[in-house]
Length: 118
Image (cartoon, rainbow, N blue to C red; front, side, top):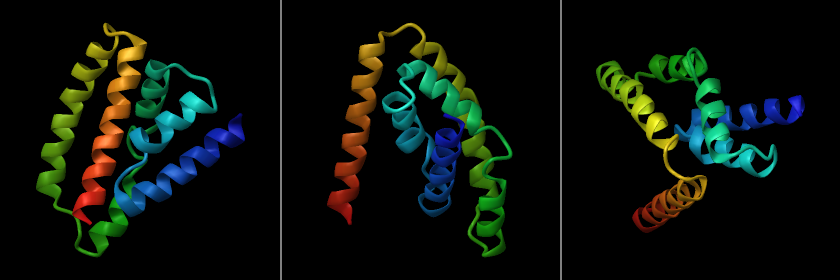
């Protein structure tokens, strides 16, 4: 299982570096389907994996090219810091089934929106 986790992290890192995604789009579904984790455990594990300094080298590459808005990133990080706690607290009180369904709707919505605007 260690090799699976490492490969999942590597793929998520590559996708994160290219598209800015990885956690919710790849890690969480992979942990649910292949590691047989619950939705809550998969999300908690993904958040644990994404703690600093995971994105540091990716940010460095973009920063070197002049493609990082540090002010925006700092404000987004503050919002994520507060929002992650609120979201995690909420996720503990709703059903596992509802969490999976809302997550699926979010993925379909994002995919549809990207498809229609490309």
